[in-house]
Image (cartoon, rainbow, N blue to C red; front, side, top):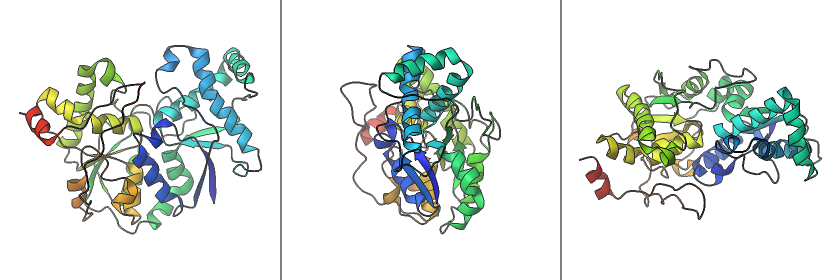
Length: 336
């Protein structure tokens, strides 16, 4: 049994629910056990570090301190030093906190002073922070993944989209290349998919620019979708909840802005793994995406049941506004 501590991050139980559902379906076949860090908190996403450094790193490091405490407990994961996270932003933040607390002792001391108020402490370097994709490729291994494939994705033309936060700055040198990493390509090929060379694999999706500068965000999203479309892809495979959300939820608005007609589904790579392992689309959250993957998956004989339309992303009293789902009439009008 491969045991790890899991930092899920906020999105896994909300906008990236399909990521969590599909991840859960591949754990048993791959002999993986993920023990969630108890009482974890939000990592602050991408904004807080630019607002107030010490509170931001303290917020992040609290999770590392909790993981260290749980690591040594009798109810922990048997002494694992590895914390994994499926979210690229969470991965980057946790890795940055560990790195900079070690590189800058004064920063580490101030963060630990803040943590001491809650009876916690984190010694940098205690834990290995790794992304889920890294674990699957380098710990579980591509050969082991191939052996679990019962429904190869032969004929499914996919572009691998890593996003900008995962392979950079790569403090521990985990990835094959900062600009053109091959890990996601290799995993998708292990599933039998037809992987298309995609030079934009590490280009930015815009992050929260949809709320700050929509014109800039829509151009970044358009470039990614157009690049996949021009290369004949049926869909995009993502490793990051923010990337998946941006390209999925804002694709119609991007079409409206540029008067284009793109229809490029974007699924999490774990959803494609689940399909290759023989699981049904409904178990994997497929059908909840706003840009439907139904036609794309029909190319490999996978039928996505027609159910009620996906719910509009929930709006909260606080936080960033979310796009609403357009009606079919509005979609047709937008691209005229």
